[in-house]
Length: 139
Image (cartoon, rainbow, N blue to C red; front, side, top):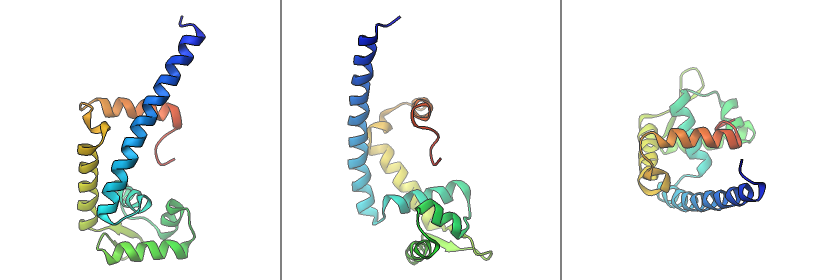
């Protein structure tokens, strides 16, 4: 069994490593978003639409943590850029250009961040560990 002081030191060291990774990702994330002209919230909304398909405007508002009127403004901005469109049933869906854009951003993040240095299996392992620490993504 590891003595408590050794475990505390190891936990502290790991926390510092995690902070270094977070700082790297934040810097790269900011650079990528600046070039793409989007906010992080807009990009995560687009990614959610890639993963889950058409989204009701009320769900967009919930995702953005705002009221329906502000969600309309956000959707209008993304629509003007050709990244989303309104479906005939009134939901918002990702446009082909939006899907392509999200794919490019994710590829750039994989190429530019420390997470991208992991082998093919390690991102899934890291995700499992992070889920244990903070809960499931987009919860």
